[in-house]
Length: 180
Image 1 (spheres, one colour):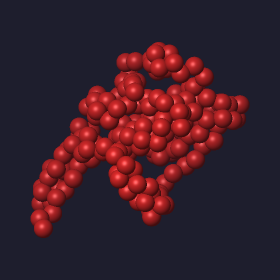
Image 2 (cartoon, one colour):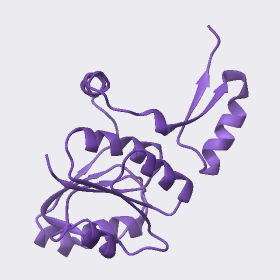
Image 3 (cartoon, helix red, strand yellow):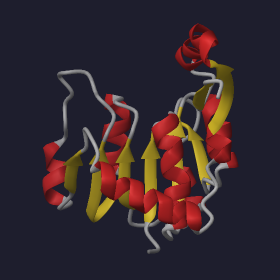
């Protein structure tokens, strides 16, 4: 409760992380990306600040949010090497980072930052399926709003259009509907 959270990457999973962090009591949720379409969705999901990393300085945003020592929690969802470096530089001592984005195979890591800040890094490649389902059901029952993440609906037979929209980067979650 009350943590400052940095989410790097406003893709569908990064976007889903915003309302979850807010729902469980994060103080500040800051989202970085270079995709303005997805940053606008992050804003609709009540991110405290969005940062277009190609044009804005995260340090200035941190100051406006009164984040003095760094982020307590980092959710690296982009797979971008630069995003990981920015996250490591701006973490609080003893911070926790979840790594979900898949970076290029050879991504340099500044291990001095990890070691001297006492950071905990956790790789995430799957899910504890039943545990996460139960937690999400509880959040849905207590009012979490996920509707801004769903940006497009297509009938199942238009799946090619659905995939084209997803690949364009101009979408959140895309739903394919099957007739009942």
